[in-house]
Length: 293
Image (cartoon, rainbow, N blue to C red; front, side, top):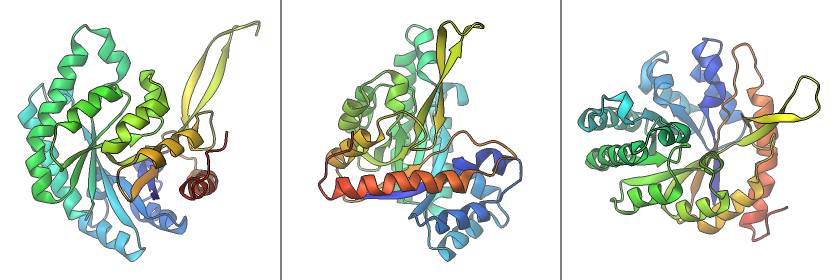
């Protein structure tokens, strides 16, 4: 069963600008009828009353919480895996304090950067693996599942290789859209990663044409993140593959909106529309129906 949630990143620019509080985000999320809020630890850390207060407010509105940690790649820790693992340990303790079941981390390096320098991809993957394996005992002690996201960096086979050799305290976090960003067949990538994933994101892409000055032809197009249902990605197919391939009874899936702007209060409206797209699709798939085309 897919359990829908919302990622607080939908409000990031407004949270950063002080236009909205994490309390208001919790209230809106609860009103939308989803099961959980996925929140960056910094939002809880910096909230009035801190982490304990945010946990209490989530309980009061009937929401579970999951946590976003941060990047664990070489550039963020001067290529020191011990320092990176220690930081992951701090995030795990905060996630435990929030009563989260899982903590998401990512490399913080993207595919085009990895391909610019020969050997960089291999070195980065080895570093991330080292950090995750050092942090595994900390995750086991905290009771919080440590999850590595396919965050537009590595290919699915590479990520499966990292987690498949690990213990039960380490899993994948599956973003259904990010396989496009590393030029993989998204359904094949989901098929490979879903059995090792324990939660995920769903978002969308919109394409915008970039024309020459006389509009005679396009010089290319821009790809921009959107809420589910606002773009062109094959969300029905991705959800169908997730339902087929996930290896857990309940799979938390958070709507991720990455195009927030300060001064623009459009989150609830867009989330309502996205949930209106996702809910009937998921219900049909879980009832044994085929994904609409």
